[in-house]
Image (cartoon, rainbow, N blue to C red; front, side):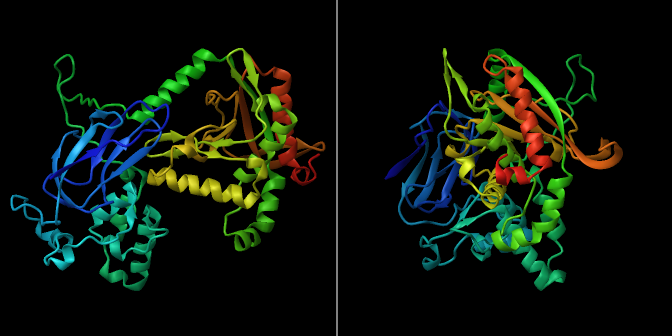
Length: 428
């Protein structure tokens, strides 16, 4: 008896998905709950588990195909899990051990067992290094890329001479390894027929297409204007240097810069609520909560997960939340709910070396704060020339809703709060 594997219900506002990667091929054994295929939407990657234990039959939606909710992806033949078909090519000599482990030899070993879930980026690393997932310690039943690297670090510390492949493992853990490898760029004739001018055409990812759509929407549907200021981070840096070790010991989170900026942004938004509002038709929608979007770079592109109710979070909770977003972005495990909503956004191009830029709104939000690289440079302070760690701030806002006066004062408020962090505590 064959069982249909169907596309699950897609999140609201998501019309379709693209088949990204099949984890199994026809004829291979699958266990109930084991991931079969990954579907890429314009926001997240969805994993489709096997509904029953059996053998994967025909694949009806190949990689790259567009599918909609409830479409049939593949068929599974129910019954006992069997070994791979005889026509399957033998494993190369260098991976024979891994192949032997992957194909149970006895009926007892072929019974379904509870295995930890392996995230997409961790799965590729496990596959490339021929690791056994059951040997890797997991958190909450999920093996992430960080867990794989911690496992490799532990192996290296125990017996470094036995694991010469750790350098390759570190290279494999780079961002480029977190997504399926694109086909090699083979030299092809140019349009004019000349050789030696390679070109390659690949489909745009759903996320990249969505980013392009939203950025174009922001440019066309809003009156964008950017105002700039600069902030002296000497006081913040001194505070971090003084308390960073105690902070980390007590809270288990690193004391970074972003928590200061989030706190300052929330305080400034409370003083100037129009920057936390949005336009809804002919109405202005004022939000009585502060959901701050934090732009995070991922292997698939820029994503903006949301820190909910940031005004109610402590510094440690903000830092931990941002760290979790960064790890989930690398693993491709951000949920749709974590990427939906938001009343104001912060993007930090300084981590890539940007000195100055004009960020673009994340619709339907009305403002976004851009952070940049910290550079020590001479400034005049109390009539003296001193060297200070300076950062340029950029605020892009929708001029249809926000007047220049409010935007400038908002940015000045952030500057004042950061140059004298005691203001954040006293709210003055």
